[in-house]
Image: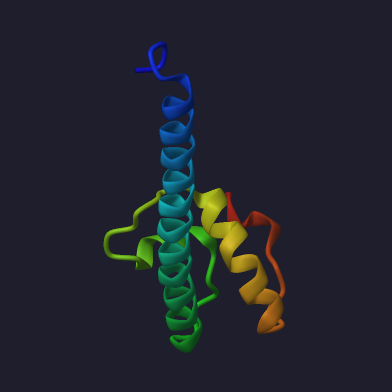
Length: 91
């Protein structure tokens, strides 16, 4: 198809790439919501929400990256005026 119909192939390829980016964005947005809920729940329980504890509080996380979780909870900490702990990823 690529060699026979290059314009059609390019259009299909661009459409698929756009769809894949949108699907990833939606999946990351859903994961960020799960992280935020776990973060708030840990805070409600009086537990300091480290990246490791937040990830452990999510029953079936879509991602397992501590760095990704830390990036998501950083704005929540700022929003709630919670001091950041440098050892978050080490715990």
